Length: 86
Image (cartoon, rainbow, N blue to C red; front, side, top):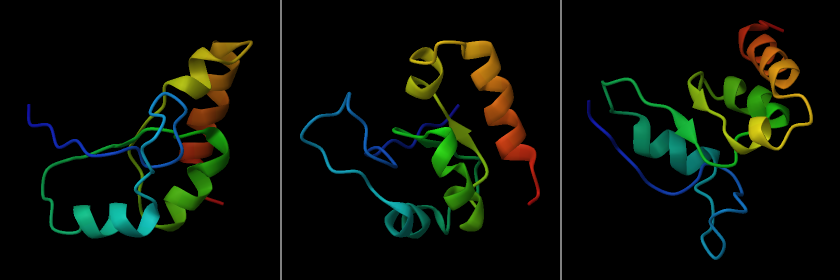
């Protein structure tokens, strides 16, 4: 397994003092990568549509799930957001 790690994609309260990469930087860093990669760090259900609009389809979501009152229901909603074509 290969790992390419940089800063969070979005604001991540676990990484205080570090600014997030943002969409444009993430796209620039990954445009020539031929191996599968995932956006990670500060990814939440509400920013999935922005990622999809920018052709970013693989994400790792942690805080949004573990901080949810109902992680199973939240996971289902996230999966639906990722697979929804609208």
